Image (cartoon, protein in one colour):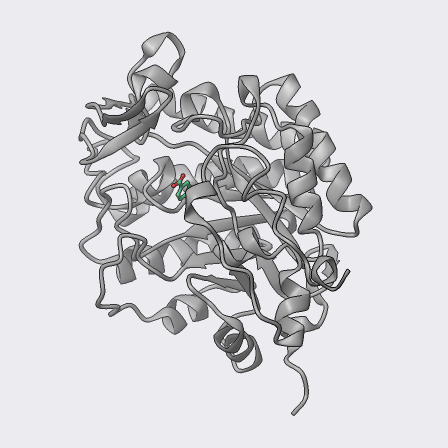
Length: 362
Ligand code: PHB
């Protein structure tokens, strides 16, 4: 049997990716003081440069967008300098790298905000659960509802972050509109029944994402901008009464931007079962490349690429433990097992010390 096209080059916007295997965004919480990327972060991404494309861990677009300890930002000059080390290392090793733009909205805590401010959200609805703070887990607080007049300021945060990403040498950006963070909080009817132009109807709930994309594609061009959505994910206490209709609407509205790809998280990170969602229908509504994500292994990835619906498949946890994941998948080699104890925070252990096949042979 012919080898799968998973391992063949793929033309994505202006780039020719070396394969269709993408490193998914993964929070690792190992940025330095000031949420600045360090040499060790450059080493980590450089080790994974054989991915067709790397999407960085979610990176806050502003101090207000931060919701976790030691996640990198893209709002200060020091952070831009730090990211330059990362993009250089990846490019020197022949890879391509997009930055994921992140605003957490209500999934934060006053202790992570400037002057102990309240996290902001579409509405004053307190999420169930706990925030990760520098002082350990603390219950989420009641967020402050954004006023209509503050929305241009949010779009402005995305604009400056997108400009910074360009200066930092990235190949593109991914707008994070998934997993219960700010843009997803606007998209879903469980967290957004605002009565202004940014809430209520599907069209209104999509408005902020569309304004963000208008701005970000104005800087990067649509062909270097991706969007991540997670229609089924209940993570971060998020919900929608009709995900198929909501995200069908969102995807149709995305078409006018000529985006690099739609990145779909096809799973529910809270582990709930019962997938009644029609992914093929969502995929068909989108005019551009479809990047599938969520628990894919070798066989399902090959199948999804060779007989549709995916053009690209992104892998998360397997990339943590296997810096040379594309080679391993191509050879059908055994994969290293990832250690969840070292996913978030810490040092080089469980970060830059997973062996490649070559290391093992040496
Ligand atoms: C996390 O830190 O757990 C996290 C961050 C971003 C995501 C999902 C999970 O999109």
